[in-house]
Image 1 (spheres, one colour):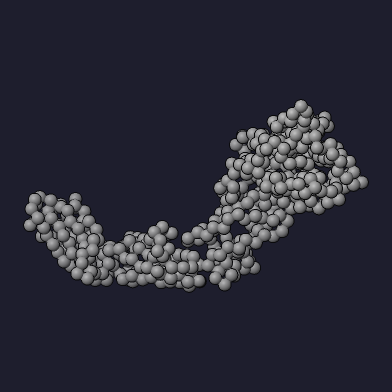
Image 2 (cartoon, rainbow, N blue to C red):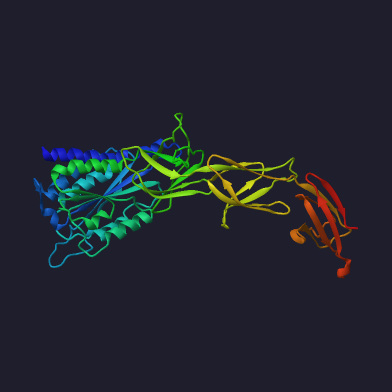
Length: 466
């Protein structure tokens, strides 16, 4: 009766992994449901001859797995394979640390299940436990056919690494390269000796048959793919009031983009629910200005997860008094004291920023610099500059020239004149200006022409250099 009970539990957990693991993807209408490929890695080393409660470890494990496979013959959208280790060479005269083999290549259940059952029936425990080498070989077991897949390893073992390999490093490499998701490791009768296995993936120590059901229930939670989550964008009072900003979930190991959502409040005024795959660890980028990043996010299956991110925001409103003479007037926005540009905002627009102080560089003629502009929580900071005027310039001929603004008895460069044109129009902020120009045909400095003029807000001024 106990074995039947264990079988039902194992059947439940593996069915959830294989069949239920894609529900989150199915609910995302913008992404196709991916194929799930599962590679069972089965420990057939000599230690599996050992007893485990009511029988030998090998007999119980083979029976449970073999019976379970029958239920997967007609399963859709999954593929299965089987790799074993420790079953080809005996421990004498010396252990073979390359004793691993892909017994059944990953394929549709209708093909792979009968083959896996046949292989399991004939396997006899013989050799050592080369877990690291086996995991390394697993990387090539998953087909590279360009399909969008979720590649999962389920390692069932009763022993630890015996060949001086580093299974933790191999597992991390497989995940970092995007070959597999974090493996499941089910330790059978290890009696607490599992430190070298816990870092491989999601490890569960089944020390007795009586605790097997509880462990499998945990695995079910870990394998659930249809896991709900909400992202709370917190204001300065730690209230989840911020919204209407894009957010991207990256795989923490590979850097691959997994999901992109526009943060939304539901009809109850709460952050709306999104669907995430709990098998991954995530880096979340909230595309505020500047962006906010939260790393190493793990999702707990079977419950509604809440991810809190500090993202207090306020508004910056750039306006010009009167009617603008500019076709467009951009402003470079930087965090106070830093050179990196966080945004280029045009005048006449309202933009939202993370609360803090900013330096502004307004690309007018001449440029206007403002420092330590404060953006407060849920407040609008208004920046208004005077209405620009228009200069119409006439030159007697082509030639080099420069435009300066006079400030405190100094000339500050504004722009170069177009040396190939004899007339041009320039939008200028109010102020006192000076033009220094020389006709192209003049070969002596004495022929320099200088003009002073003043631009009033919204004014029109004509300057002739002859």
